[in-house]
Amino acid sequence: ASFLWIALALLPYCFLTYMNRVPSRQTYLASLGLSWLVGAAVTRLKSKRVAAIVCLFVLLHNVGILWIWKRSQYLERAEWTDRLRQILLTSGEPVRVHCFPYGMPIASAVADSVGRQFIPDPWPRIAPGCFEVSVGNQLIRIPTR
Picture 1 (tube, rainbow, N blue to C red):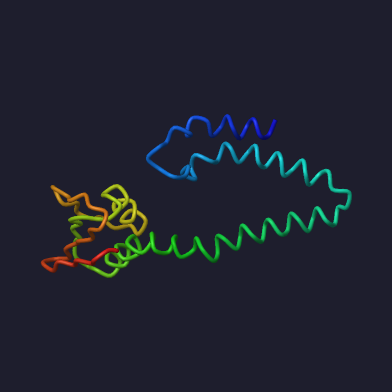
Picture 2 (cartoon, helix red, strand yellow):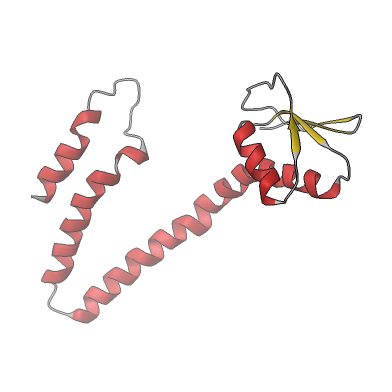
């Protein structure tokens, strides 16, 4: 039943010919079938100690992925919101946002989180690699990766 669940969950994505893999967000439903399979295997183990060791190993493996590999990705993604937050906190003047890598709704949420207002550019540029703000008459342009 687990294998059938996995196959049915991934079936709609088998026609994705433009990618050589299934995006991770599309595997969540299929992973439920895999978790049933792993759960059934763990319950079949005779020794509770071995089952606990297997569960601990899986937990340490997953936490290790988050701490070692994913953490740098999270920090990299947060860099631009942190920079905008610092500019908003340290400037006494109004801050005009010309372009922001994650769009104006995210820039607005950053400003709200520190209790500051920002002035969105009337014609903001939408560009993933763009970070430009003005504080008073000073333009701050930070190159993004």
